[in-house]
Image 1 (tube, rainbow, N blue to C red):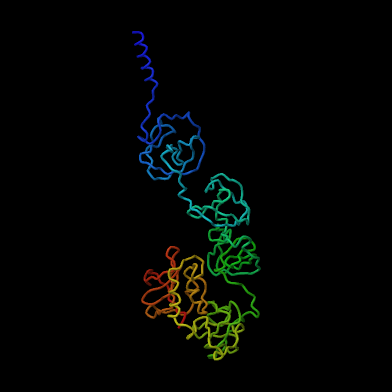
Image 2: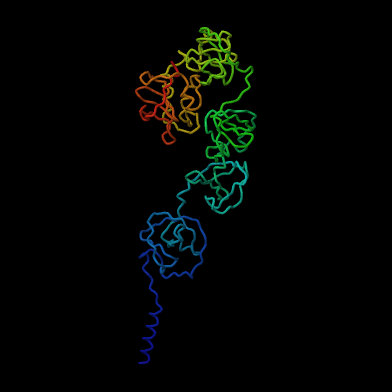
Length: 462
């Protein structure tokens, strides 16, 4: 009897201390795993859930309260793990999941990159992650080129390949493989701003931080330019401006002569060849008259009138005036080709312009670009198409809206440009235009009615 009692007591005590272990996968976390079993270490890795019904737990134990269920295939960032790697703590909620039912995942906000960037400022921090609240890991060196291995999808942060640290890309500029050294050269040029609100930037990139804006007409002394001539550094503050929206300030020798009170004008049909760079077309025969565009050095133009003193000539094609000290007489019978850079009759037709432009349909859009193959914006597209025929258009949409002569929609013909607020397109006939549209669409053909806010139609070639 005593032996039986001892046996029963043993069974009762064993049951009191027995802890049941759930079937593996019943709730997709472990059995009796207590907080005392492991320490916690920090992490910033990502994991992807591979099962349904994986519990969120208040702590790293199956006996801890369930806080809901994780979603299969969802990616979560962790902020901590147990030292044995079995449990992970979700960064934004603080809940824990059992990591046997996850796989490592990449950061969904980050993409791989092989870009090289050059730092444009001093005291740019290296960060442990892509956030200004992340721990500073030191500072990058101004003018040093760094190889990236990743970027955030919004393009704001880049991860250094050799250290894994992050830098804020607004204070860097892209560097190509063949630009291992400096990408700028010294300059003593002066430029005049041709558009309102031209941004000054911390570096020579549209992704660099905006440091202020310049008004139209502001004259800037440069101390450096990028080698491609696209950006200029202002001497007095070190900020950079995009030079497509400026014009050179030159000391013309001799300078264009002021218009007397009156000049006699005489008719002519002679031709002249331009010998100067950046010669302006003016609304009248005076340097005080409105600038309507530029003629191209080396091109030949037919005149329809001159001032009696021979100083100014009026272009036959569009009625604008040029200063003849920067042109020489030209005999068209002595040449098999007469280039007329503004729109001279007989040099090209509007249809020829259209035929040339159509071959670039489908090519990319690039803000500030002028390349018909590698990327252009809307005004760069029309400017570059006409430049092929030796016809010089201003760089910006607002200035192109003033060139040539205005025509009505009932008079429109292929080769005319249609201007909208902040946009310009080339008319190709049949109520359609070709234009550099957006970064996602590139160079496309659209109906003229795709926008209802047409402002003017300009005829460049007669």
